[in-house]
Amino acid sequence: MRFNAQQRGPHFYVNAVIECPQIQRPSVITFLLDTGCSVTTLLPFDVMRLNIPWRSLAQDRPVGTGRGMAIPRILPNVTIRIPGNAGLFNHERVWIGNIFGRIHTMDPTFQCDPYSLLGMDFLLSFKKWKIHNTYATLET
Image (tube, rainbow, N blue to C red; front, side):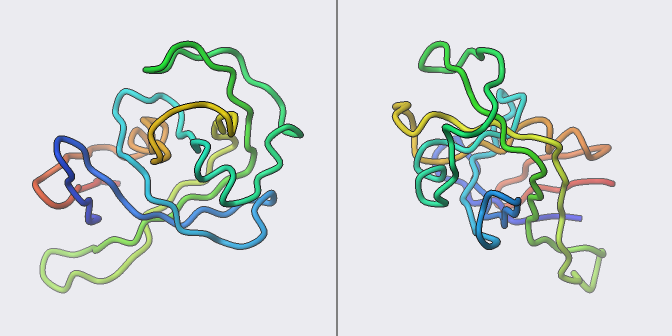
């Protein structure tokens, strides 16, 4: 399977649909593919845009970020799906997805880049993955 990843400078971005009980309807988020991020994380722009009740979520333990230590909150029961293609020749449209028991959300006042982070907890759910020039391949 493969999905398209947009390259901007040295980084790759993907559009994904996110669903969970705390979000009123499935929503599209642009995620930065971040191999340095252990847990998929919604950053302030998306937390505010999706009206996630951040203060009512349970706190996780402190984590180190590029901007210093932070205390994320846990968003439970999240599904993230990315449109992709399967097959060598017919490139059938499929959804590549993962169900997470939890992901992180950052405080809406946390100063950082605007793109949420698709972390290793997503990528490691596949046997093999590789980033190419304009797309990523995932092996199930």
